[in-house]
Length: 277
Ligand code: FE
Ligand code: FE
Ligand code: ZN
Image (spheres, rainbow, N blue to C red):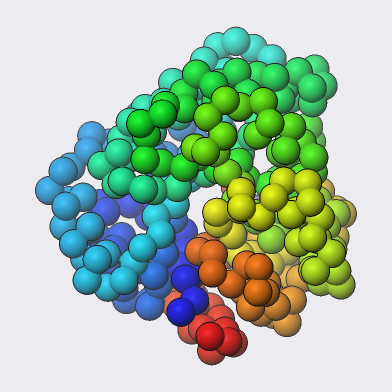
């Protein structure tokens, strides 16, 4: 069965998010751990989480992907910005233990002028401080579009980070179809080749999740603007090939398309109809 869901809000709690997921036939969920622009997280409501876990179990929702605030920058030049990223992620990981076995995705960061090498060094430093042998969460580096000085556009950069991290078994990659397409990987014309390249450089065993998005821009544009499924330059046909690819089809997929609940429901239905068991 296709594992697919979308980004949902937890502003009304985990249980309500679970009900939203069930209402659109989603069996994966993604949510922000806190306000995407950063700031304090709500205190954990254990009863709410418990009800959510029960609901998820009853409805076959198995993959939980928590997304870090996208304003965090672990690669920043200023120590206080890096410290903030570290403290926030550390706190997120502690809280995620209420949801054992979850995935936690973050944007590697932007080096803002000091060079990718330095930025990568900072990201590695942070990961080596926050990853713990007993955590149940797998932390994922998201593939980026290469906007500005973003780190993580190329598979090589992600591999460099992974190689330098000590607890590699707690670290993986989340591949965003819009981002890699904008980043220059032509998944419309060369999907097999791109997957092969990912496998050779990073290794498909490191791939834990896919953000399934269409793109408003062209391959190599380095823009990062998501489109609804079938309404962008990747298109439905190529995205259907992604969900059916023998090396990807078992992975959990998460839509981050510009939709409300109803629109997500339609996309999930469309993709389920085009999935070959
Ligand atoms: Fe993201
Ligand atoms: Fe994404
Ligand atoms: Zn994006």
